[in-house]
Image (cartoon, rainbow, N blue to C red):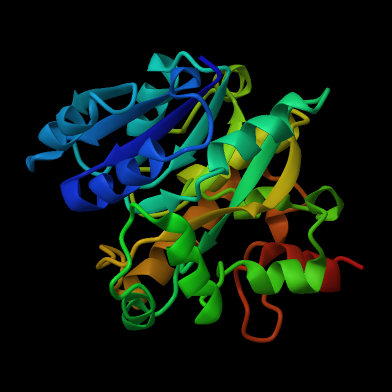
Length: 289
């Protein structure tokens, strides 16, 4: 088993189905990867969805009791259960391009050092109506067509502006962990375990992914942008769509991160650059000089 795809879910069976459709059509041998779905206490038919895919891919379904918002715990459970040397973390509703797993594997296997590979997510944090319009009459069975539609509509990864301003060589960024978002990212399983997996005290929206990213960074994992490893964020209502609540949660998360690590990078989290508060690497670039 070369790579394990870990997907947490909670009452999002149809989004999960979209993600699994894209995994059926991967370019690598099906014997070389597995999919682990960890249900964070959901009550819909996600288990049946996984059962439907058993003849098509190597898939396991794990259910954990509903004890509140625990996607970090769900991902940790999946990582521990995994048998692959590398872990690809995606969210329910992320559909992967045909060559995504193959490209993640090649980047890791070609390196003599441990890597974190950040995948590219079209439509992430984009206007939902615009994404819906772009994907009209497109199926999650044909991800390459979906990617072309997103490119034509210019619905890029919402980190694209950072890549444009700061460059694509994440090794030159002072704090690449700030874009360690578990929507689409891979790392070595042993490294994820070595740094302690997800901190389960992050039990509200945001923070738990960047927290793990900081520990991987501190343990000398090299960050690399996989801007040719495409995926699409399938449109759906976001539970965190309340902008004010999301901003409050984000502020609480970065305060907690700085208190936990107290590093020179995290100390810049609450410093503003004009009206931008959370583009950490840009703030460091301009204020840290």
